Length: 112
Image (cartoon, rainbow, N blue to C red; front, side):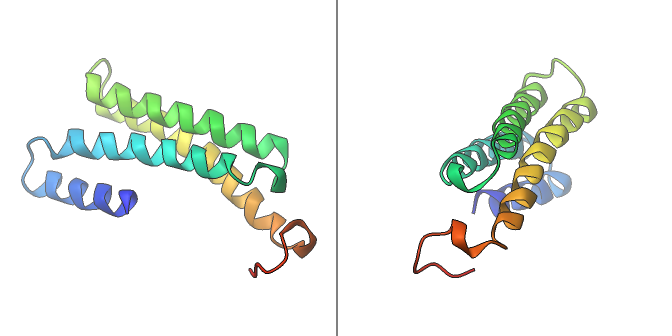
């Protein structure tokens, strides 16, 4: 829901302008924090490297959102910082998906 809301705010920002860009940046920071929480929850099911990549990536993405809101750097550089952070989260997501191939790692009663 946060990702969809951020996408809608981004579209509104491009059409109308105003405070919707800041609201989108806040939503992206929240999305990164929620992704870190999601990565931390099933921590026994993925490699430690993947968990570290997700947590560090979430921190970098939150930093990028903060940079965009603070106007310390341009929006392009802040977007690049956020993208690097979300790439770390993406690495965790790929490795978590690969761990689904081994059904023995998941508790009974859960299907893929």
